[in-house]
Image (cartoon, rainbow, N blue to C red; front, side, top):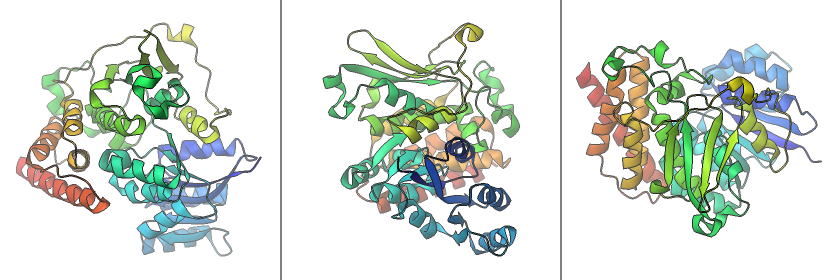
Amino acid sequence: MNKQVLSILGATGSIGLSTLDVVARHPERFEVFALTGHRQVEKLAELCRQHAPRIAVVAGASEAQTLRELLGAGARTEVLHGASALDMVASAPEVTTVMAAIVGAAGLSSSLAAARAGKRLLLANKEALVMAGELFIDAVRAAGATLLPIDSEHNAIFQSLPAGFDYGLNQCGVRRIVLTASGGPFRTAAVDSLHTVTPDQACAHPNWVMGRKISVDSATMMNKGLEVIEARWLFGVPGERIGVLIHPESVIHSMVEYDDGSVLAQLGNPDMRTPIAHALSYPQRISAGVSPLNLAKVGRLTFEDPDFRRFPCLQLAYQALQAGGTAAASLNAANEEAVAAFLGGKLRFDRIAGTVGEVLEQASHASASSLGDVLDADARARHAARELIRAYA
């Protein structure tokens, strides 16, 4: 068996660490070529000592110098920095597999570089598809890349679809796909109390261990909205055939409904090592170190429809998907700015959706014929969001 040679983009985040955990369990299958860590230099240094990548990438020259000093003279790992280095390790000829786990718009360029290089691309950076879905999918197809979804919901759908799904919904007898959502920490909180939510409260997810930005997105359900847009491009499914269902136990990770009345679902404990291991070994299966699911212990599975009054960000995502063009890029950019402001104590939690909604209303939603169009829309939306946030202050 030939080893997969991996670049792990965003190695110091939760997805990156879970990937390295799975990889370390199967040294006969995987070799680490590159790890990236932006500004998490000390954490990246420890990972380099553990996994001995050939290259490590950080944000800037000062971080690179610090990392070199931490690794010491004679280290086997070459240290690089900057966006061009990220693109390089994503597309290097030696690399067979790329885990794209850099959060937010910052991960777009390197994810696209991996797609254009025809890599086996494990996509955890949902923004690549949210911001530039059509361009990204075109690049995957043109280069013959293999695109495997890492989000637990999209991975569950991938596992529940029939082989050969590329030929479309109707030919496969698929009625619709259903993304499940935990509902986050405020699923039952009084809506009129959400203005008092603190960052620590918003980041206290009941089921998943995640970074702070994605935890806030889960609390607002913007995360699910972005996943709806992502699903549209991953599976070629129009928005009206993508449903969302709140499932607080997070045991069913998503479902596919068929024309004959069948519903196929993927179940498992809420541990990201399951979809990571699935994508790393696909079409085979390997141990992920995840405890077996004990349904008797779970006891019951419950479901409810999402309340758009409680979760207006989810409705905004559907609106952006319907608007098309660069609307989803504007949605994502405005949300990133609003969440950063909330985490920084500059915006109330209940004003995140309002900020994003106002930016969407102002944006032109022009067609996205190039990456430049997407990045221009991103920049305009960020500027508009910052102006609104300053007005709220």
